[in-house]
Figure (spheres, rainbow, N blue to C red):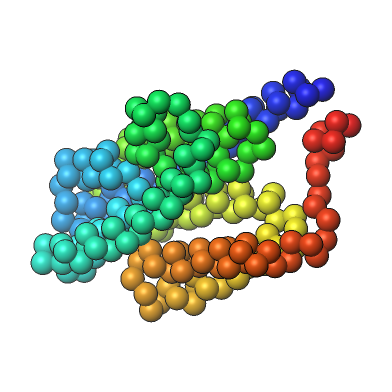
Length: 242
């Protein structure tokens, strides 16, 4: 029974990684189109996806460039860097999962983003965490770079990519990952409070800062262990050996 459960965990991690990777790739078209509209050429758009490879920071950069042009370059870089800070925080959580030699850690650092971290930590075993991380990394990296190129090439014909709903693809994928974890009062409280904080601060702070501030909600709740003992944890039957 234990082998069957592990096999199911690995398969579930593989499916989750592919699904999230495809969802993230979908809004790469939006990035490519918006980047060209902001003044970048196709080559610059693709190189940014290849080297920077963090969608939030890329959108922040081109968003500032679109409103301020080349003169807004320093501000654009600062906004992208602020939003990229969270990837370094993710690295602390992901490092024990990756393991292995230095070159594997370097590769993992390149692809430690929202999607890979979310899928990895959502898995129940170390093996399935690694499968989830690398599957998501491969699917997202290949898909994002391909769709960035497509978006840059067809940007003019596409029009406003937000009209196609491409900007909501990643958000929908994250809701799908989050929903199964909302099984305890503490998890629900953290998710709800973080969402309220992020929504409230989005109109008044630079891009990326609302997410970082909202992240402190989880730290505070975890540090004081609020709500942890309010109700017993729900354990899936297969984990109990049934």
